[in-house]
Image 1 (cartoon, rainbow, N blue to C red):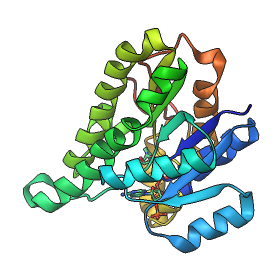
Image 2: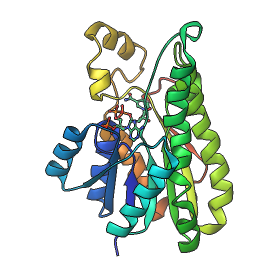
Image 3: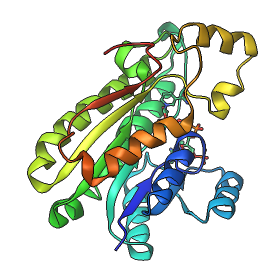
Amino acid sequence: MARTALVTGGSRGIGAAISKALRAEGYNVAATYAGNDEAAANFTDETGIATYKWNVADYDESKAGIEKVEAEIGPIDIVVANAGITKDAPFHKMTPEQWHQVIDTNLTGVFNTVHPVWPGMRERKFGRVIVISSINGQKGQFAQVNYAATKAGDLGIVKSLAQEGARAGITANAICPGYIATEMVMAVPEKVRDSIISQIPAGRLGEPEEIARCVAFLASEDSQFINGSTISANGAQFFA
Ligand SMILES: NC(=O)c1ccc[n+]([C@@H]2O[C@H](COP(=O)([O-])OP(=O)(O)OC[C@H]3O[C@@H](n4cnc5c(N)ncnc54)[C@H](OP(=O)(O)O)[C@@H]3O)[C@@H](O)[C@H]2O)c1
């Protein structure tokens, strides 16, 4: 029977590419989103992949949503914690609200997504936890104290989960994308985009599908001995 994969924020951007790549590998896929109903409906129409709406920052909503997915599609063996936001500001201007919104979504959201599926993975002696971190969690970034803290936190989460899950056949790994050609990055003025690209030795942005292919490998049986790792996918922009 095909395994089931859950991709948070799986209806847009990098997450959408991940959902599609996992579907192409033969997994049953559930993609979640926060509020953009139109994008989610279009994604389901286009791909046939089921979408579910809940806020990853809320533990009870996440747990209830995951129970619904498991009842409708099957036990979740692969979880991709991809949902993330930015609320950038230089530190002296960053508000406690901007700090908490990003921590709640990007960091607590990973706990809320993985914690409810962990007992089932332990029981079935198989699991794949894949967290989408960021180059900015590795190197820090001006105006992203909140975001960089969450993305560095992701690396601590997977290194710890890897040690707890290894004997139960569960692996936990992080991917740190560099700048990827998503709507958000493509929407910035061309001048800013050019200056971003000038800092990437590869001379281009990454494609969402390039991150999706890393996820597909980590989700597979072949990746069993890769556990607690951080995969950098950034066109040689930064070496951790
Ligand atoms: N783009 C890059 O260059 C880049 C680089 C490094 C790392 N990353 C990381 O990669 C991940 C995906 O980024 P992206 O650029 O593809 O993002 P995106 O295009 O903005 O899509 C974000 C997705 O996450 C969902 N989401 C946001 N907040 C949520 C919440 N509270 N609860 C549930 N779902 C939520 C969104 O739902 P709605 O559609 O409803 O809004 C959407 O599906 C993020 O973790 C980001 O930090 C991105």
